[in-house]
Amino acid sequence: MNIVVVAPHPDDAELGMGGSIARFVREGHRVLIVDMTNGEPTPCGTPERRATEAAAADAILGCSRINLGLPNRRLEHSVTARHALAAVLRQHRCEILFAPHPEDVHPDHLAATRIAEDARFDAKLTKSDIPGQPIYPRKLVYYFCTHLKAMHDPTFALDITEFRLKKREAILAYRSQVVDHTPNQVLPEQIDVRDRFVGTRIGVEAAEPFWCRELAGLRTIDALI
Image 1: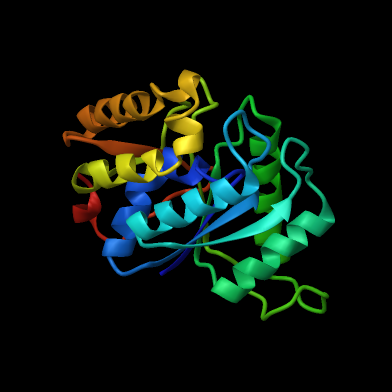
Image 2: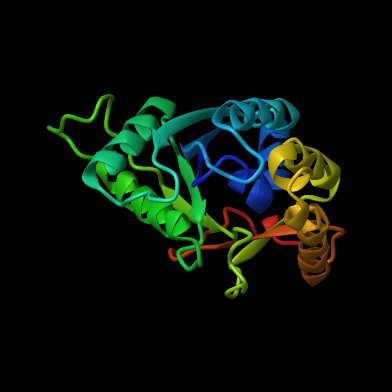
C-alpha cells in the first residue's frame, strides 16, 4: 500500500510511530513522511541540521520524506495548506493516511491534523486546481504525539517488537532535539516505556497505539492478536 504519515515537524512521526513505519517498510509498503514545517527555531537546531537529521532517520527506517515548508510555530489550517498536502496525497496515490491525534497541547499539531483531515477530502475533488489525479485515501488513522499528555482509548495497537531498537535509533538521529537538548534527553526512554506498556496490553514486548474515528475493519479474524 501507499502510506502517508503527516508530521507537524521533523521527528514527530518517528516519536509517535517510528516502529510502525519501519514495519510497514519491511512488509513492502511505500511510506512517505510529509513534514509540514522544518521545525525551527529550536534551542539546539538549525534548518540545515534538522534536514540532515531527518535524512538520517529516513535511511534508518527506509521511508521517503518531503517537507512542505510551512511556517513553524504558526502553522495554520488554510485552503492553501490543505491543497498543498492534497497534491502530495495525489502524487503518492495515498491509500492510508496517518496524522496526529486531534487532541494535543501543541497548536502546530492541531493545525496539522485539521489540514490532513481536509486534504484527504480535497484530494478527491474533480474540476479543481490541485495537481494530479483525484484520489480518496480509504482510511485516516491517528497516532499519538509526545506533546499529548493522555492516551484516549486507542482503537488498536501494532506490534513493533522487532522494530523497537530501530525506532530508538531513528529518534536518536535527531541529536539536536534529544541528545544536545538536555530537557529532552529522557525522551527516548519515555517513549520506550510507553511502547513496552502498550505491548503488555496485547501480549507483546512493544507496541504503538493508534486511534480511529471511523470503523476499522478486519478481512480475517486471525489478524487479531
